[in-house]
Structures are given as C-alpha cells and as structure tokens.
Image (cartoon, rainbow, N blue to C red; front, top):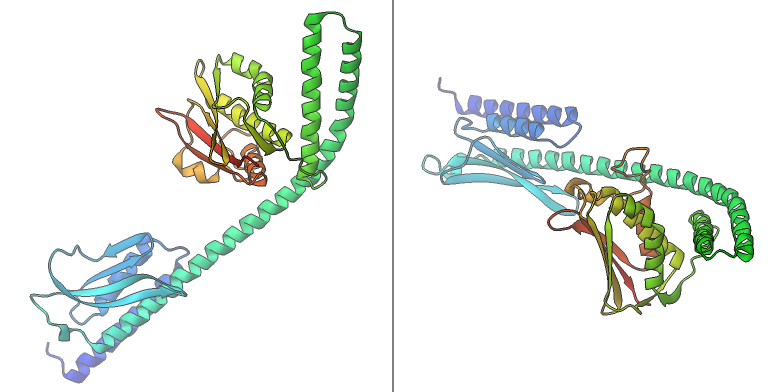
Length: 363
C-alpha cells in the first residue's frame, strides 16, 4: 500500500515513540546491565527505522558488543556515542547495505532519536555504576563494623590471656633454674621462647585494637626465620614436608618489628603447609635488591584459583572450611607489610603451587 508523505511521516513518528516507550520499559524493568536487555534494545531500535527490514543495529558498551545481524559487507551508518559523565563509554549504530542505500536514506529525525536512545542508555549504565559503588560502600562499612567489633574482642582476649602466659613463663623459668638435666633444659628453653612469643602476639592483638605501638628496629632477619621454622617443625614433619631456606647474604638486616614479621612468616608458612601435599618442598628465598628486601615463599600445593586471587587479602575471606580458618591470616599479613612500607603479591608457582612475594625497604 502506498502512503502519502503525511501518512508516512506520521507512521515514522509512531514508530519512534513506540521505540522510546519500549526502551524506557526495558531499562525500568532490568536490575543490571545484561546481554538480554541490550538485545531487546537493539531489536526495538531496528523496528523504528524507516527501512527496518534491511537495518542492522549495533551496540558497544563496557563488556558487551551486540548486533542484530553479523556485518559482512559495506554499509552506510547512522551513529551516536553513549556517554556517562566524564567519558565516552560506547556507541549505538544503525547500518544499511551500501549497495542498496545512499546516505539520504537516513532521516534527520532518526538521528535525533538515536541520540536520545544513546542518552537513555548512558543514564542506564551510570545508574548501575552508581548502584555498584553504593554496594561496595555498604560492604566496606559492614567490614569496618566487623573489624571494630573484632578489635574490641581481641583487646579483651589479649588482656585475659596475658595472666596465664605470665604464670607459665614464671614456672618455666623456675624449673629451668632448678633443672640439672641438659635434655630437659632445651625443652624448657623452647617453652620459654614460645611463651614470650605468645605474649608478644597478645601485645600485637592490643596493637590491633589500638593499645600498643609498633616497634621498628634494624636487625638481622635470619634469627627470625630460624625461630619460625623451629616453631613449625612438628607441622612440617607431620606431612613430611621439606623446608629449604636460602639467604643470598646471611647477615641481611632490615628495619622491622620482629614480632610482626614473625606473624607474617607464621601465617604464610602455615597456609603453605596446609595447601602442600605430603613429601613436597617449601622453598624460602631472601635477597636484597637495590634498597629492598625480597622474601619469596614458594610451595608445591594446590594453588590459588585466578578468580579469588584479588580477594585473598580481604578480611574474613577464606577458601578453608569454618573449622580450619576465619579469613584473617592474610588480611593481617597484608596490613603488617603495609605498615612496614612494603608490598605483598601472589603468583603461580611452576609447575604447580603458589608464590608469595614480599618486598620491604632495608630501612
């Protein structure tokens, strides 16, 4: 049926208004930026154009590219950029085959419609970016509240645990003074060192809650590593794991809080032992590069999935069962390294396993 120019113009306006209504409805009814919603949008745009049977509509936004049909020949196009405040984030384009249409096939009203659609899609994207930021902020607030509660709990625990530790230390030193058996003497010495270490951990729990200051001083690192490996010897023996430690310079020194660095090594090595199979090897390398100390801890365990690597230093995140961990170990490690003006990163070992790399300034 042949329409008069007035009727054709009216039909085009109806199609445009219907398109805007459909797109507004699609945007209102979706709760995320997704492929299905974008597909509905471009199909709606296709119907609104003058020669809809031949029109191919494309849309490009972050993470998505869709088209109503694969483009395999030359086309003439109408295009509008999709913007959010401060940046161009994509485009929407309508194409006609070049061998069938000329540029004047597009109407000026269609360009204005396309600009309006691009504007609406930009608002759509901005809305969900804002929602994502709000969700992240709410998550951060929740985490802060949990950490504040944890700080109050740890302060109480640290105060409570100090009394029995003081009793153990006092009686151990008394036994040591009265003991004449050299074999027992070395065991008592281990008890004394372990209690002193535990008391320092209690102090650091108070530090976590804001009661104790960090104590940095220049000292050799080898004794710290030796103590941690000695302390974890039963854990290593239980799984027949060999711990190899290599110092490029055994007199390597750094300005550190020895108790905090002990906590770092203890947490990382406990995790390495947990993840490692029986009869495997954990390798520790300490070297000085320029003005930094590089500490690498390599295991031959199960490795860390790529999709969780970015989360492992977050408080309360854990891949272990509830009975095996609470997700605080690596968070504490990360905080301690930051307090030493250092960095920690995780990477894959070859052929399997994980490498934790710590960089801290010499002073």
